[in-house]
Every structure is written in C-alpha cells, then in structure tokens.
Image (cartoon, rainbow, N blue to C red; front, side, top):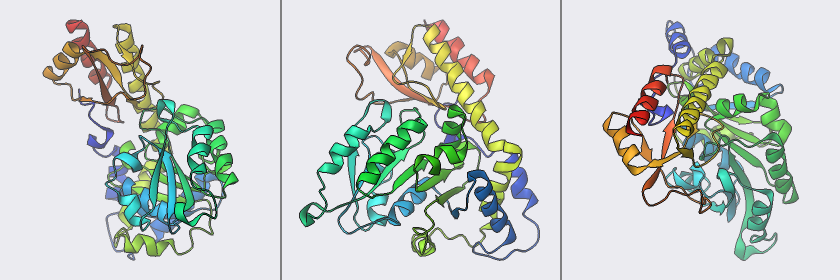
Amino acid sequence: MNFASDNWAGAAPAVMSALSRHNSGFAPAYGTDPLTASVAETFTRIFEREVAVYFVATGTAANSLALAAYAKPGGAIFCHRESHIQVDECNCPEFMTSGGKLVSVGGANGKMTPEGLREAMAAFPDGVVHHGQVASVSLSQATESGTVYTLDEIAALKAVCAERSVPLHMDGARFANALTTLGCTPADMTWKAGVDVLSFGATKNGCWCAEAVVFFDLEAARGFEYFRKRGGHLFSKSRFVAAQFDGYFEDDSWLTTATHANAMASRLADGIRSKGGRTAWPVEANELFPILKRSQFDALQAAGALIYEWPAKELAPDHAPADDEVCFRMVCSFATSDEDVDAFLKVLAEVG
C-alpha cells in the first residue's frame, strides 16, 4: 500500500529495456549521438511541429532553466500560490533567473484564473522601474492539487499573457497524466493552446531520470544550451537520457503507464467515497487528497499504508476537514496494482 509518491516507483519495464538495449558499444558524448538526435525527432513528431529539445535530469532544473530563458532584470514570474516552483524548489527558479521574483496567484482547485492573473500582473505596470517587469507566467499541468487545466483554461491564461507580451510556461511534471485525462493531443495541450515552453516530465511516469525542456518558441531557445551547461545539466553520456525517452515513447508506453496510474487513483477515490470519505479536490489525474477521520488515517498508517498529511487550504468551510478529520495525499503510479488499492480499501472498511 505504497501511495507516498510516484517518485518512489522504479523505472517501467519499457524504459529499463531501452537502457539495456542502448548500453553496448560507443557513442559520441554531450548529446551529439544518433540516439539523442532520433529522440529529438520523436518529440517533433509527437508535438506535430519543429521543437527545440534539451534533456535535463530533474523537474526543478527543467522549470528553472526554462524560466531563465525568459528572465528580465527585476523580472516577475507569476504562478499559483501552491505551485511546485513556488513551494518545493528551494528558490532554484529565483537563483537560475538571476533574482526573478515569484508572484503568487490564487485560485480554487490549484488553478490560476485569468482574472486573478490579470490582477496580480497589474501590480507591475509597464515602464515603472521601481516595480520591475512582468517576465513570464507558469502553470502546472497537472496541478499540485491533482486537477487538470482544460484547453480553454490554458488558452484563457495565454490571452492574459498576450496582453502583456509575456510567455506562458507549462510545468508538465505529470504531463502524460493530464494528457490522458483530457484525451487530446500533446500539440492541443501545449502550443495550440498558447504554451511557449514546456517542462516535459517523464520521471514520475516510469523513467529513471529523464526530463526535457521543450521550446515551441524556437527563437527563445537560441543560446539555451549555455543556460543548461552553466546549470550543470549537460550530460556527457546523454544517450542514456535519450534511451529512457526511447523506451518511454515506444508503442505509446508513456500513455499506457499514465492511463493506468490515473485509473488507480479514480478507483481509490470511488472506494473512499463509497465508505463515507471525500476528497479535498476533484480527482483528475494520478493524485488524490482524501479527507477521513483522524482515527481512520491512523489505522491505515498502522496497517502499512504509506500516506502523508496534506494542508487542505482554500476549501469552503463546509468541505474543509473538521477537528477530528485529516486531509492526506495519495499518489498512484504505473506500479500501483489493483491489489494495493483493494488492500487499502479493505483496511478502510474494517476501521469504518
């Protein structure tokens, strides 16, 4: 009953097979090998247009370096107040952007709204040197609340970006999970909706350590290789990152693993609700945030469930946890089994 994080799962079989397959022989270093070039072409095919792709090891590096490409002196980067770049990246975006200021934007269910974004950006009027400059906007897909922006919602945020001529960045740490939820194409969820640069996450969905910065704005990608090198993310043996992506994309393995993880989360949510529990936010990807009695939570942990308390912020009073309740996070992965879900729900039924 390991629902601690999708980061706890190992690598998917297709990824491990590809790593082994591409391990023999010699290949040029620093991303000049044929496999890296081939995988870059795969990204172009998947996104239905020419893109510039740069491999990195972590999501934090992908986010921070992508935002650095659009940095300005006194720059302000707008993001949801619970976003990963705001809460969980140890000021790396600020560091990599040479002091960019992260500006929090509120919004229910982990999502920014166009109105909230426009209001936050209004505090940084153009041409007023004292306040700095609007530099970029970053949204998380899926969000830190386990919800997913619709295509219309992404486009609406892009419209606000266009009012101030700033780029839209997508933190896609759980990109595949959001994609399978929407049932659209990668192009639909990114550049066709107005995204300029994407942090393409694969580690949480079955890779070992494989993330990519994908530019749809090719002009902005010029010189990015220097940001990556300076940030310490130019791999000498880049073919092993490429190998992970090769296995990840093979036979649409990445969509299969994401679909499975989402399905496991939905099964858990349905089972929890059937036993009188509820979730803090809609369950739209592979994360869920149940609210149960404290006694139930303690019993589940005692039975071996790896789950963690989570702050239930911005919930309506009639939906927020009561004094005897607790909100906690559960994350499913490609490795989550029906047996894991059944075991959790069995314990929950027994403790009533």
